[in-house]
Amino acid sequence: MSRNAGFFALCSVSAILALGISCPAGFGAAMPELRTPKAPAAPRINGPVVYGARPAHPFLYRIPCTGIRPMHFSAAGLPPSLTLDRNTGIISGSTPEAPGNYPVTLKAVNSRGRVTRSFMIVVGNRLGLTPQMGWNGWYTLYERPADADIRKAADAMIASGMSEYGYQFVDIDDGWARKPGSSDEALGDPIRNSDGTIRPNVRFPNMSSLTAYIHSLGLKAGIYSGPGPLTCAGLEASYEHEDTDARQYSSWGFDLLKYDWCGYSKVVKDKSLPELQKPYIKMSSLLEKQDRDIVLNMCQYGMGDVWKWGRQAGGMSWRTTDDLGVAKGSSLPGFYTVGLANAALDAYAGPGGWNDPDYILIGTVGDANHSDLAAQPTPLKPEEQYSYMSMWALMASPLFFSGDMTKLDDFTVNILCNSEVIDIDQDKMGRQGKVIRKNQQELVLAKPLADGSVAVGLFNLSEGPLTISIDWKDVARSGKLAVRDVWRQHDIGSFADGFKSQVAAHDVVLVRLIKPGISLASPGK
Ligand code: GLA
Image (cartoon, rainbow, N blue to C red; front, top):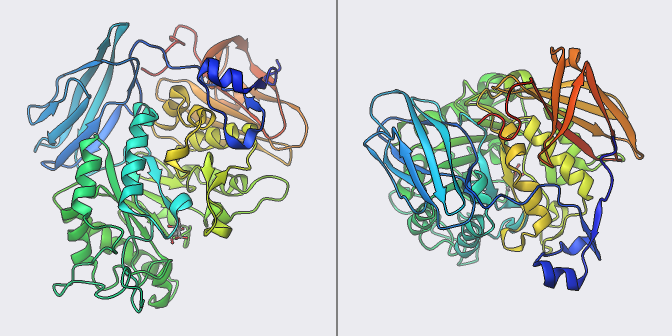
């Protein structure tokens, strides 16, 4: 079956005016096919079905839900220490003190219908039971983030609808601290206050007010530092100030710390495993002592096979490779190089600890090799963007968009916000897809899902169309299985023994193989 038909729809000015669509700047007069169907007007609750939180800490969760507003939310079984804002769907309060599983039934009602979804709050020590989702400013703002940019990104996460699909972290990357030795008043001395607490540069006048703003939207705030004396951009980092900094990030109200090795190369004794692990064990144990949940995103580019010990070192995710923004491919774009390296590490990912192949660089995004230049529309072809997002979801990767949130176009939102693609990434079993086949021409990845179905990506790595197949025996299944086209969210049909599809160059066909009798309309819900 050809999945390549009707790829382009005209994106003329009249179409834009009549249909209210916007065209990504890079696509000229042709608007690539939006495979993701428009969200129904009736409510649909998206995102994870399990959520880890630590006892008696502040709790914040915005129920991701599409459908027309006004919407009214309720949550049966919500522990009494939590309250739900019925209009916004924001749950806040204090996580119960007693560890254990708290099953909740989330409900959303609007003028077009109602929906319920089971949601398990797992109170214990583990955070990140499903891969983190959000936005990180690095590939747009580089070393120049400012308070206003971060607020605008948070606003756009709501306005674009991304929060309705589970995107929740709004992360500042490098560039918020001060620069030792700088003569620039905005960046220079004093680097720390007399009590040792770290000082943001002038672009961040009030971190507490910034996180309070992000939290008021039901979103979470992330910050960046590193174990060395300096960050990659040469700004103050946490070396010999770890305790003070962990307390500071917590008191400012941050929910995630990306901790980037970089300047630690200057102080590390050698590259032995204990030396590689030491700074992360130190920071994670300090974060655990704080009175709020702070997710630790380890960033050290895969040294010492970090995937084998990142979880024990206290990380909820660990970058497995160098920066994707500077990765090169041969005939394929760089994300394949990173994705294929990460795909081999499926044995190490699972609830509470994820392989991190770096951010989703699509939309309007800066060039890491020329970070002084303004962000531009991604050079990736539409087919490549479908492949990128499919590969990340099949690998249970953290999903962080790092393009410009203020320049989101319909095509980019269609890539980022497909509820069934996100269900694959966020599946509660937390298995990373396995490589079933990989050669010069094709890649087949298969991810078993909690409801017994299997998500399969048929990726064409070649320069022309190919027919790519999957045998049920490759995924330990037999008999008749229903095949669902995940991007287009429709059922293709039932097949015995296997399935094959034509796949365009650099494109993907992402399917979900489902046992007969299980509802296809809303798998896994
Ligand atoms: C490293 C990291 C990037 C980014 C920059 C910031 O290169 O890998 O993700 O955080 O540092 O300087």
